Length: 499
Length: 133
Image (cartoon, rainbow over all chains, first blue to last red; front, side):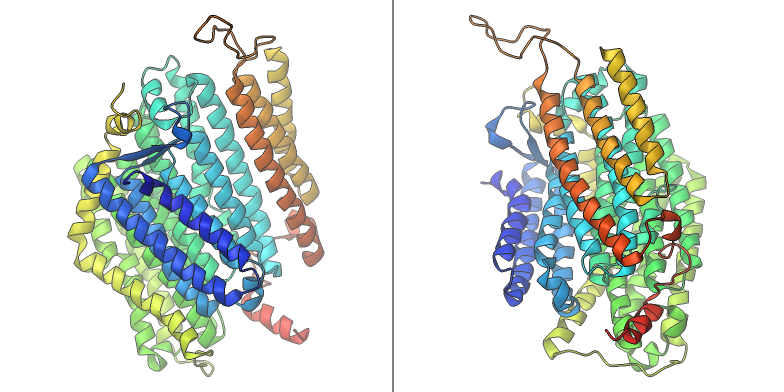
């Protein structure tokens, strides 16, 4: 039974996507389905994580083809961890969408697309086959293309064009790299690849392929210098969609990077992982400097997504167990903190009538609770104790010091300070400054208002809880990181103990 | 044969990337289409070219005897063709819609989401209201 649980992250979103298609005209039904479906996805993620922690890596061979001939689905602690975060975030965003999404977009299939996107994301997390990973990426991209353009506003179309073209280019690179990998090894199964790449006859070519993957996934993860599509497009769709994208899409790119650079490309760690570390540093700095110049709150936060990706890369680049554990912990923290800041931006827009910080003001006086709701994730993002961001950064810095990588540690600390500057800017402009015009109260029924506020409260509490109760989450991250650093266990799980 | 295909793939990649760097959206689209075809050929060639040896186990044998044509790259290409077909269809529709709404197909003019936010929400909604939406 435990093994069938592996299929749940795929089947649940697929099933609910189909159900919402059946309910095409019944928006109320679709809303209900979205909440129930994401809740089931979240709970199956939790169940899966529980099984993986206690019984080790679970696998399913699709069609019962013995590995490496069929497609393997593999769930280790890292995958299960990601499914849980994705499910949790999806649930909170689904609740928020009840109050925030407009009727027109709902009538044109927002919820079916939402579930297809989740299916692609979860598929990418649990697949154990590199070509299958490409397919899940495409599923996810296709849904995200439509979600980004859905509504057809001018800015959306323009943003979508840039997003589509650059992501297709990245997919093309991914596919080419996979072709080279197949011709080198004759296999696509990641566990099998892991064995064969260790004894390859052409180590230089493997490093070339590794860098092709690095570029392909870096475009998706918005890593320096390939991030420019993100601030050009992420602020254009409705904030609900942006929050979902910021939490899931770039993180799938980071997931793929971590997966291939812990399982497959270990031939030349000194080169590849140092490159990743350097890219991480540049990503942090450019992201945060880009943010400093912005006044549109959504663009400002989009640049911060990039900056935070740098921290995730830092852990991968250091490549020790504690660094990877710190990365995983940071992943939960940043997904939640980032999404809630976007959701708050939507509330500021609804009440202040603008996304432009210069036109906002007076929120602290009028809505002190909202100000507190902003302050928690904002300070957490900057890394102020005792919130989640502090422990994530602390663990990363410690791991960096142990490895003697003082430059990246210095950069990461300086970037934290600049992040604090950006958050202070939002605080000063939107909350502290006197209001330039009358603030509106939230419109809509009580239910809609609750739907807008509840996810923000929950995410704020999660941020606080992650900080105050960092120990259990960090222990879990340690376990997942230990598994990541032991490709042998992954291979053994896929081949069922056979060599 | 491999050399000829390698040259062809190189030319296709060059053409595709050149077209993708053009300013005209339609040329970018054609570049994308050529790129996906170049990659399909790339996968095909990397799977080793073997003629006249279908991957069938001869009677009396229990395993394939090399050399034989590897069927897997062809399966990959089929998948890639289907995906690129869907993606290209979407890209065509998106570009047509973008051309109609934005009134230009010159990528150099599409910089409002990058630099000066002419479609800034404030302006944007003000314009919308002015147009009577």
